[in-house]
Image 1 (spheres, each protein chain N blue to C red):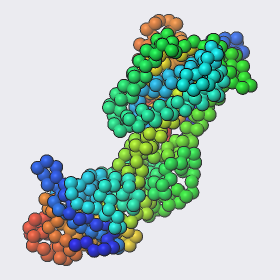
Image 2 (tube, rainbow over the protein chains, first blue to last red):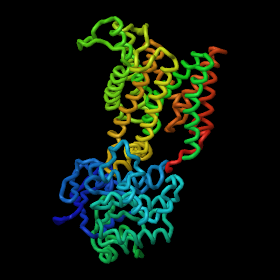
Image 3 (cartoon, rainbow over the protein chains, first blue to last red):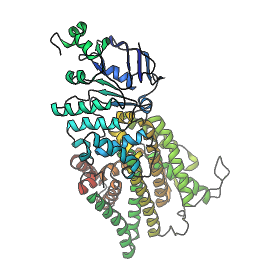
Image 4 (cartoon, one colour):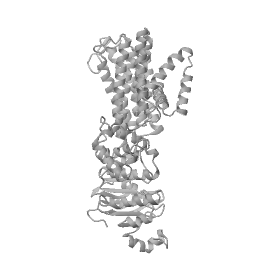
Length: 252
Length: 325
């Protein structure tokens, strides 16, 4: 069960699409300083669950709370303002804008400063300083003036992360941040995520099992909409049900 | 930014230079044509914020254009017949600043109403909703006999502006040109502001805007209101140029013409509507003198732009937009 003090608490979440029970009584929580990985085979309902946590989907039943506040009825923007930073599985970036413009937009959003009509955003030091810091952290400083449409896939993944960093969130919800990255890119981003957990805990959905078992403090396994096991990596690796349902007998 | 700045400056100089030359050469009709281009450009600049930056294809901007026109027509009509306005016991006015204020306020309120109802939909449904509101306003104007119905309203003398003789074609042109330049300058500020970035991002990736804690609907509504207010101001000037306002200003063909101006010139480009309006008025005048089927040439030009020059005239001349100076 969830303990008091959890940054994110999900209790009894259910979501049905027609005959498909996509989320079946899911409860999980996320505590300060940890990376909680959510794994499961394709079609297990990970994206549906992430959608309900971030606010894009409304659950049929259950409760989502951020830092003790019930946000079940709140939309995505409201949850973002409460400190939920989400990265997307398929990059959701303003493709015609430059890298810097995208990140500055994130900073302005975090500062609730989007309702300013007169001062050029790219000349405002209060917006530029955090934006440039996030670009430096994600290794994108050299691409500040590049149009997002011209970025490589790996650079877009890093920009996704930079967009989440500038929100100065209470928690990260990351949907496959490593998807499609090569070995080097994956290793670099894994190191970045490793240092990130002290700033804000991460709920991590990821298919890269090496990264998951290296990074996660806890792992929850989702199969057919249900969480079949939750525990530290070693326990999950040894769990017979998990091996049978998901990892395969010769899993890591 | 280099090339686009040069193209913009050239357009601004061209639009100012032609009527100055016409004044010197004694061709007042050319000045009137340039004034028409400047005012249509202003309407296009208003539409471009919604259509270009915001990605909101409105087929109902004639509502705001016509509303501005009727603001002029109704106020001036009561002033010249010395009758008070209905509802409020106020006299009409022949003062452009007052008329403009009424047009801008009316356009903003109407855009807030139409926007609040149609911006909940998107894509082709948004287009159809704006068209429907446009047709409602059109038929309302046609069927209201108080202000001329189908025949429209004529104004005997052009309205006045403090310190200017607006009956002088060049002075009226310079007034319209100054308004156009001031609005373009303000639009440039808005586009570069955090609001402008957010509006552009809402077009490209609404989910991203949610993720940074903003709601696309509100941003779009405010953009639609600014857009409607600017187009209404252009409508007031347009009616003053012709000293006439009729329901045709509210027709869906007018909405289409405004879209044509924006697309020809360059969607989301600051001076796109200026280029589009100059081209439209030039084609209309010179080809219209040769054949009444001149719009075939306009159609061909539009086809060429859509097929071969997606950035419109500005795109063809200045290349892709550059974001950082």
